[in-house]
Length: 372
Ligand SMILES: [Zn+2]
Ligand SMILES: [Zn+2]
Image 1 (cartoon, helix red, strand yellow):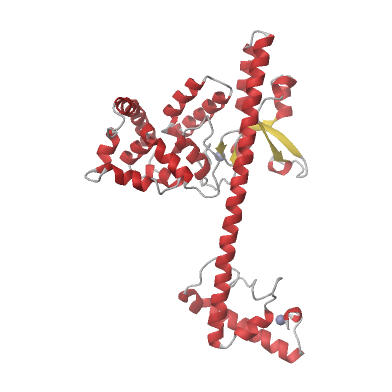
Image 2: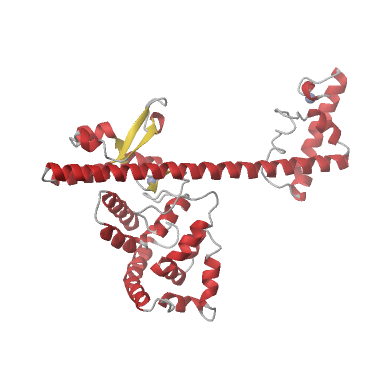
């Protein structure tokens, strides 16, 4: 409970950060949040974790000071972790990982966590980002390295309610991944905000938004899409805007907010591109694995004298009953055990039946196109 409250506070912080405090403020917040950024719900009891984080936060500034005094000297945390291993070995390992690996590593022990969450490890996070294929977009201005890694790589639970469920989508207007239920509380339509907060059009125009299809918001029609905004961002913006004293101030503020909005939306586009590239590459990989499985199965069937029958069914380009058979069309390498236990028996049965039918009816409707 405490944990989720803290996370919620953090999300508020981040949103008010985008409402435009100075760069200094953001930097300070970033270092304060290093710890919060990457917690996972299932690690230890909530109470214990909260306590643990506190003490981590206390330790960090000391490490940062020591580091700035003697740049080359080993950070205090490293001395605890490394035992007799040279410092270089740790960096050498970090350099080969991606940010998701670093997050998991940081969760394995308190010392590693301290090392990885300290400022001195920023280069390791940067290197880790450069190891990500297909060009992960650069670190956004208002996120720390661990926060960004958390956003991109922790997709197995809702960052708001912490319930374990796959959260595929990063909601950039919230800078988090969350479940549908949480999204429905944290987001609302721009129209609603305009009405309930009495937001004027100039202000409405600069609030960051995302288009969401109707069926993803309660029971609206799927062909409609709605401008959704973060409820708390809208509130913060409204409060800031109302506090401005002169026309000049308003113009400057609106201008700044417009830039933040544009940046966020450009970022979202970059991120979606990256996700698409990643997905395409993954799909290709899986297709290769499926192709290998099919070839493997054909070879094994060949040894049993059934390859020819399978090849009669196989269509060179389109759909056919063999290639798309549920035991053939899988992106999993075939093992001897699975072959012996089920695949061999079922496929031979299927091919036997096919051959019998084909011969007794003088042809087969399912594969007439592929008989050459
Ligand atoms: Zn949730
Ligand atoms: Zn057939």
